[in-house]
Image (cartoon, rainbow, N blue to C red):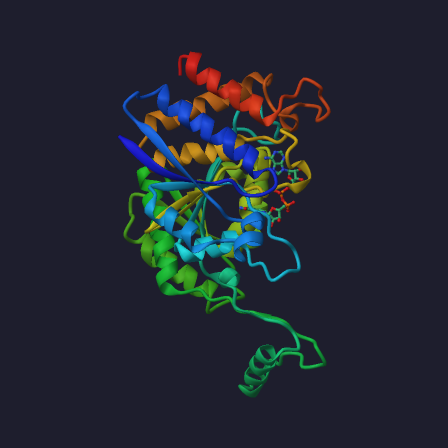
Length: 373
Ligand code: NAD
């Protein structure tokens, strides 16, 4: 059997960790089941292709990912202060990758203040303040909205002083909320999880987060085998820091999901070990939570673990559960030994025994080839 996969090499540290990940995935498959093959198609997105094709996300890339069984995407730089819209946001919207799933799990040997964390963030990926509906201050669009709202005489006024107010619209729909909350419950069921917590700020944003909470409660009624609760987002942040063991699957609107993903990555040792998946009805893109860390570009220095673990999630997604489990065990074993790991996983970040990106991948591959996993 052959799985058709796309590889987006990305910018900055992207190409190095993409290559490390591809090699580990090939080794996981080759050492698990000789009859299965991963067929890779390299597709382009990011700063370099922008220069030659005038777009950071060519249609051909979107189409290739749509047709593939899944894609691995290394991080892409979003230049600040240019018209270049985030490729990540655009790709999620173009393929309607509505569910962002970020498991946060402790691995022995990763430095962290916490142990035994095992949480899954399920973030709605298409709506909320990330819908891209924004109006710059002192533009016609912003002024029309301000005039309209002020004319509605709802008791509150938006400042109309010169150049004063920018506007971002936060749409939250019944359809998208139902879809993501159902996804969270289905995920909980399929993965033997016991509880779903829905996060919101419904006490303040009654018609957006209030809708989210109402729909969450409705959906929960269809899953009597899974416990359900809700939390206000600020309280949730405190609870996660103080009592992370109380939580299991956490479903959130886009913005809170973005922020709490990093909080939870911090609980398990940081961005270097935080994998992720973006799942839709017509595509699945697996990527690390971290970005392209441009200052480390080309140095063979950074930690490939987050993207390799994203690849592990991809193997599960395409039905290669045994290869996925073995890859996770190989990664966990290398981290637990603490020898062939990158600088960020050493007790002292200047430890001269730290290995490079490539060498850490080599160590994982050796475990797959030699270890009894
Ligand atoms: P970043 O995650 O790239 O880097 C922040 C810091 O985290 C780095 O300086 C480094 O110290 C550390 N770090 C990140 N990844 C690491 C790894 N694999 N191993 C070891 N250390 C690691 O965040 P940033 O600096 O805010 O963003 C840089 C660029 O990446 C921006 O253009 C941003 O838009 C983009 N970005 C892309 C994605 C994506 O493609 N999914 C996600 C986040 C940020």
